[in-house]
Image (cartoon, each protein chain N blue to C red):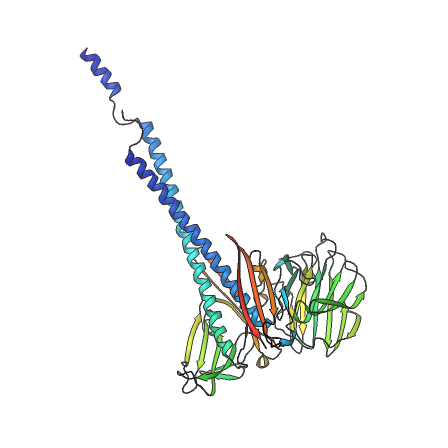
Length: 309
Length: 196
């Protein structure tokens, strides 16, 4: 009786197993390449966009810097979605931060409010953080913002309410006081901007008013630091009235008009900007934006360079 | 002696298999066939999903690039402008640009070309580009589809009034469902009006 396998049988078996490896290996490699193309396409769009936004302000404001945060646009940071939250002011849903990013100028998440920029306007938002939030959290919104480092910021934390002005990322406190917010509770912050006058209130009770002419118009964005913050009943009125209660929106998604793509949507996404003045002409600034992400085979990046002046 | 040989041969030269062996072989072949079939189906589905994903990405990228090219060459965002028979009011869902007229020799002519972007009213999944070219322009007047399967198309500006904008923000999301596969892809970018 013949025992074992013939050489032909062994070769056929090896060929079959090899063919399976080739087929599945090819599929996996193709998938990896498509993922890379996906992230690269998004990164290029973000880098080109960041460069365009950086070239928008007067070139005199483009002072030398290296590896600095982006300027000229309010970038989406962290991740957001609609979720059913117990105790929201308008039940049952709210906008929630589902993931935070590395802090930039004291904000670990930010999401642009639609239909901006706004000049004179009334902005209002109910805010909250989960009861198990880590110490040091703050939540609220920025307004008249050019970017995360150039704006006014109204936030509430565990111990007080604060209105700040950020210029080039440096914060100046315009007001601080009042009582803090208990994590798990809700409070409504509101601000009215009229020319250089900024009036702000909490739960409908006026808190204070300051006069500042640094920013007269800009974007509004929901921001938080160190917490998976929640927002409800966001409204803006500037002649037109916009109100978002989020209650009929789909869980886990962003409402269509709030949808955005940001650096944080890339795996391990980072974005930095470098400004230099490479020639004797001090008005000619070279701006380089680098967007990086973590690819399957290690760190990847795209770089865009432009000139202002 | 002969009878013994016959009996011994019946034991040692037995050909074919027992019924049990046949059942086991049939079961093994059946299981292997099922496994290979399932793997092949899964592979085909995977490849279809990957192809759908790639196509969805291409559509969004093509649409964004068309808008970028127009905006970069524009000298202004315009509103209440008729472009190839369509009236454009620049806002969050439509935008129109005025661009310098350039002839085939690269010479800049007087007047403006106009390019507008809108979703097709009859089929909002189509993103359309209207071009109204001035006489002598290298551009072609017409309406062109620049993206299909559009889920969302939104515009923003760096000023409160669109016509004063020196940069626009474009958000474009495409998506398609084929069978059990769904692919979505979104791009967001700012574009500077370099001729403004």
